[in-house]
Structures are given as structure tokens and as C-alpha cells.
Amino acid sequence: MNITLLELAELAQKIGSILERHSIRYHLTGGVVASYYGESRNTQDVDIVIDITACRNSKALFDDLKKEFLIDERTFNDAIRLKSMFQVLDMKTMLRADIYTDSVLSSSFDHLVPVDLVDEIILPVASPEDSILSKLHWIKLGSGRSRKDVVAMLRVQQNLNTAYLETAAEQLGVTEILGELRKIADNYDPNVIL
Image (cartoon, rainbow, N blue to C red):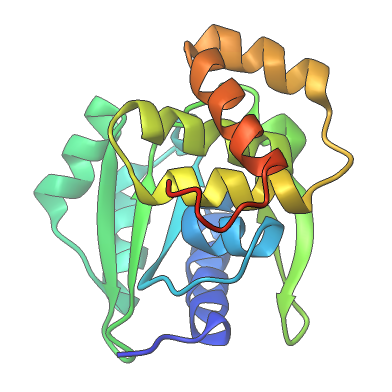
């Protein structure tokens, strides 16, 4: 099934409206944002990071999400308790969102960028630097797809705050990966395989 950016943006907007009713900050991350900052690619879901510390009533949040989405209550509660991820499945479109209750970077909510993803659907996304850093974290955990995303973002984004990027990469323990992928990004040889 080929899922469009418009469908994913509408899904994120629907989830975002519920989060906003609960005064929960959020931002998009993952493949949608990597495509926005780098090179367009297919993705089957939308990834959202939420500031769960602002949630005053997790039961009310769950109940509101359950009205629109298939969601497992135990997984939801575990994700809040363990600062991990839960999924929601839109009952009308059958599209999925992965919702992370903790951010790789504690400062990611300080660097949000409102972007018009498609058809005037404006959503908060992580900054280019934080998007790269998040992907570097996932590479460290074994994500192969994230390597291509980082190279694409490094090639497309010409005005990165390199001082911030390097300092945060050091704190995350991904400096070596960043250096390696920078070299690949600077080399446009199509024979270089990630």
C-alpha cells in the first residue's frame, strides 16, 4: 500500500489536536521529517514524540485517543511508565502512528519548527539538527535506514548549526557515526553504499 504524505499529515494533525486538548507538546520525527529535510522517501507510518511530563490525566488522554484509534491500554500505560513507545491505528484509514513518550534529546522541544508539510497542514517538527541527532541515535541502536536519511539531510541542509550538532553528538556518543556520514554526504559517488 502506497501511503501519501497528505494521509500521514492528516493523521498527525488528528493526533495533534487530541494532544493539544491535553496541553501536551509534540513534534513529528522519523521518516516524514527525514523526507522533509532530506530526500523524499516512502514511509508507512508517522512518528510523534510527546512531552508526557505535561500530561495531567493519562486516563483521560487514553480515553480520547481510544475514541478515534485502536490502542492497547497496557502498552499505553507501560509506555508512559517506561518512557517508551506505543502505537495507535486510525479506525477509519487504518494508518498507524508510533508515539514516543520520551525524546532522544531533552532539548528537542526547545527547537521545534512549524512546517507546512503539505496542503497547508502546519505541524511542529524537530529542527534539522535534532532530526539528524535522533537518527544518529537510532543508527547507534542498529537502524540501517537512518544512515541514508542522515546522509540525505546532511546533503540538503546547508545551514546547520554545526557547533550544536557536534556538541550534542558527543553527548549522545555518536560523534564517530556523524563524522563517517559527513564524509559520505560530501562524496556524491553513487557507488558508495550505505
